[in-house]
Image 1: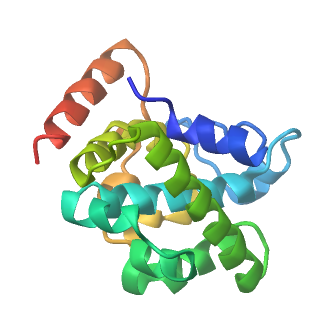
Image 2 (image 1 turned 180 degrees about the vertical axis):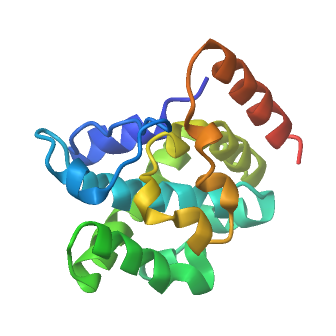
Length: 185
């Protein structure tokens, strides 16, 4: 199995470890900010970017774009016309300004693309990237803060569905088959 993209990004950028979101416990950003040793703003920014890359790059045609994308328009390509809404949601979540959030998310996106290329290997093809990203879906969604309502913003309700965040023996088996069939698209 490919390395966990979320963990690789954390290590590469020196972030605190991200918390997995328990789908059975309602959360709000004030509660999350009060926990020591975490940075939920950074988690929100990083996981939003990874979710956007996953959604965009899971199709081979779009994965080909990721191979040669320029950093200056990276978020626009990944999120399309929803870019501003995603950045606003993350900046509100972390009580940060829009411009610093956009800059942070762009840096995260650039590093994420590099990690993906490395994870796929020297012979990166659009199909390999799409497959790699499909295999990372669960790793991404279990860390996606529900307060962002990212699925609503980018028109993919599966992102906000709590069943995607469940873990355990049965859920693990279900996620295995989910990823298996997602690769066959």
